Amino acid sequence: MGMKKIIIIPLLLALLITPISWGADFVKGLAAYESGDYATALLEWTPLAEQGNVSAQYNLGLMYVRQGVIQDYKRAFQWYTKAAEQGLAEAQINLGLMYYNGTGIPQNYKRAEKWYIRSAEQGHGKAQNNLGLMYENGRGFLQDYKKALRWYALAAKQGVDIAQYTRCYVRLW
Image (cartoon, rainbow, N blue to C red; front, side, top):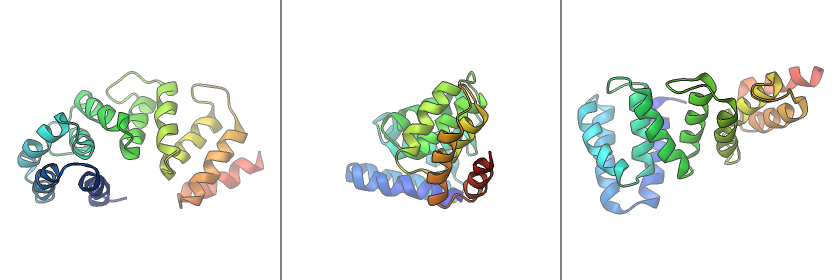
């Protein structure tokens, strides 16, 4: 999924579930971000994120991980956590990835599983695939091929290519 698609999904959510004044500032921040004016995007999104705008929180997390500001995994973690706690599936999987890989925080497979499950239960295919991988390899708990196959099957239905292949592989066991 491209960067623009990742940002546009939360944008649509923001416009649907937040007050109109937030939407206008968010859009200004989005336009700035897309034009490479990261300082303006940061200025527009930070107050919105502090007020609880889930899309602004998520996008600030992305900025602190990927581009636009000096990379700061602790700040990314803070913003992802706020957005994830509000139920944003993209933030939940990113938080799960941070815990799984130990990116800027101590590695913790149980917490990774928790956030992957929250995202996967919303139909996020990559989170479903990641859970399949965790159960197949026994990351943080005993191997469970039955659970792995279940999550891979769900991810495959979402069109996650690797899950379609892995699902066949796990069945061989």
